[in-house]
Length: 380
Image 1: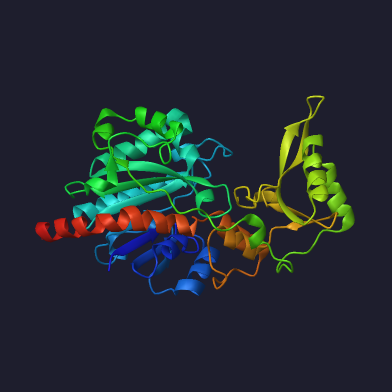
Image 2 (image 1 turned 135 degrees about the horizontal axis):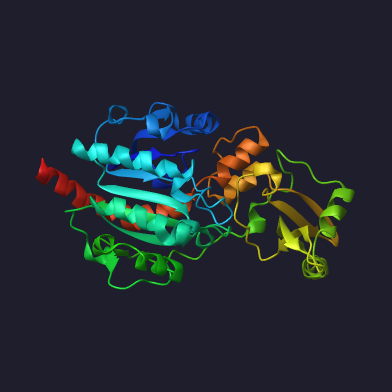
């Protein structure tokens, strides 16, 4: 059975995606509340709540096949402050990487490393942050990257960057690579970021190959509860206030939904836009394409997703419930969520989509394990 370390583990969504065929040797997060959710769902036998910068190789048991690190995205996000890898949060990549280097000195660095983050990591500081990650990996790993939008698996628009490194010397099956980028997994902004890598990093680059996933079976409205738990319906005046924040184009979407009959579910985000006079004002934007906007962490409350439900000509609104948010991340209803709304929403918004991890594991990580284990045996 392949084994893994899970860093910046949150609620263990990478673990959920890897599945029961993988053995967790170690899990780490700095957030005690997220750690409580991890323990509630997976137990705390392998869990350490600690700053990754304070960990040493003595904390890491055995020799894992995989190290998964969904390191913080806030400083790399397009909506962030632009601090990049020098930021307090996204900069935690570096102590994680020093830990991997220390494992290498003990000849037990993982055969595979996966780094997951927002696509803003490709363009942060003009591509220099991505180039820095590439330069770090290139010392001991061959590597490549993919951009995977969760909308192919769940009804949520959520593109994310996955950097996959394989320890040098491991024979890579030919069917896992390709000579040229594939627009499905290697969009133009990824190709552009690749172009800014150092020559040394380019020499270690791999264009990974993934198959097209099966057609998505679920739509947004199917995941929405008729009797939600953890949230209350807005009052008529609150719904009226929400509609008043919409531009004529967005109000027309609501009216079209009313005329179409049946039940229509729309996701709403509040954003700051310039009005017709050039002044900045809060606006509510709605989509009725049966796809959720990207879940985000509820900092200050502004990024929590609101629902507009149109049925029989009536319009109601409320916040997305914690369970609905978890479903949009591909988590089963049996997954235990925090009772506090913000904690539950934050847990989902900070996570990685479970079916995306499973697709990556089934079609890339697991096929790499056998040759990696062979190489390890030869070295021993």
